[in-house]
Amino acid sequence: MKEFGRYMLFLESLVVRRETFITYYRLVVDECMQIGVKSISLFVLVSTFIGAVTTVQTAYNLVTPLVPRYIISQVVREMTVLELAPTIMAIIFAGKIGSSMAGGLGTMRITEQIDALEVMGINSSSYLVLPKIIACILMYPGLVIFSGICSIVGGFIVGTLTDIITPTDYVLGLRSNFNDYSITFAMIKSFVFAFLIASISCFKGYYTKGGALEVGIASTEAVTSSVIAVLLADYFLANLLL
Amino acid sequence: MIKIKNISKSFNDKSILRNISGEFDKGKTNLIIGSSGTGKSVLLKCIVGLLHPDTGFAFYDLRNFTDADKEVKSEIRREIGMLFQGGALFDSKNVEQNVMFPLDILTKMPQDEKLDRVNFCLKRVGLENVNTKMASEISGGMKKRVGIARAIVNNPNYLFCDEPNSGLDPQTSILIDELIQEITHEFNITTIVVTHDMNSVLGMGEKIMFLYKGDKLWEGSNEDITHSGIKELDDFVFINKVMKNLKGNKLV
Image (cartoon, each protein chain N blue to C red):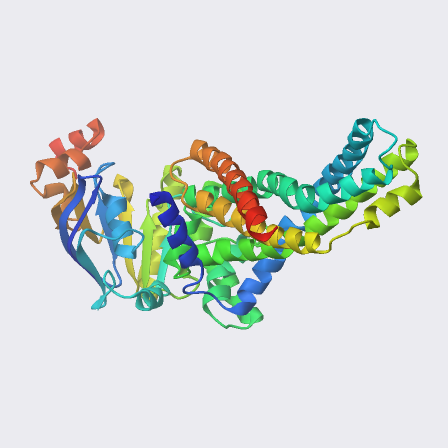
């Protein structure tokens, strides 16, 4: 509870004594490049393969000819939109971006760079952390959409190349019984997950104490705590919104 | 001028500083000295507001800094320059961007004016043609110089240096000390230096505060330090055999 209280105070500190809009604008653009653009290749790789594997495994489990083949792509679609793209990618995002944020801020803390900002009269938490959170909230939903597309395309490529499903059936499955609320739900989840990953990772990094060893510990804790928070939020959002 | 009054600080019930009071004069290099673990850096952090003292206050030209609200604190902090032990340069920026940083954030100066000011400060600390080098590409001594340039770029009224010559060779240490002293006199600023380096103490200690196990034991100048008559201070000053012999021969 004490840690949660510190986290809430930390969030409050982000919005007091802010710098100018133009300062944040530049920092947010920089962070978007670091967080978003540099994560694309990893997202493409992982989601394409997961889409492909989902197609193969669903086909493997469809042993009865009574179930039409287009169910395969329907399963791929539902898994991708509801869980794979927002949640599984959030775990990967926490591993890549969360640990990097915690490590970067932790190093700044132990090398007195954060103290240097404070002495200059700058609200260091707002200056360093707020742009990261905003950039995550801006970029992660885009990455989720991109990841969803890659997963479905991955399933299509593997499914059609290995004769598991015809292109027509695959497209039919994607379009049948489509509920567009799934997309809204996935977007809501991606905003929440982006906020949780960025804020928790920055919180862990910002309050690092000690030396290089503690920076490593902070990075690990950032990933662990972010993943737990994402999974809990996933459950509560599913209960609340579905 | 900076005045401190009854500053005390404890961590987990362990008392680090007890009722430290004193004045640090404008236009002088004021030193806080003492052995490792006596609370020098904690006192400095209490003065600049990186730590909040349990009791006591720090006054910047009669303005109460310790109990000031965040806005006033922020205003006073914009008059402060600080050199950290490791330089505390921002890794993601090059030398020029590091020195320009306070101007970018705290002023609305045009870019060419900022660049002139940065080049002036870099030249003042004896660094030229290093503008595009990253912080990780320069030596320890150069990092300190860049740190000094960044500390003075915004024309501060107060300069704080936390062990400015730690990790440097004796020759570079003396150059850094001389630079700090010259800048203090040239810009008439209140400078506080935390050090346990005897060359610094004897070389630039215009006003010295000696801390021993969290208490202030002595205050004076580098001219008085060798005949203070305080055992703990003598133990600190005449720590090595050469100095002891010099004292015995009354050469100090």
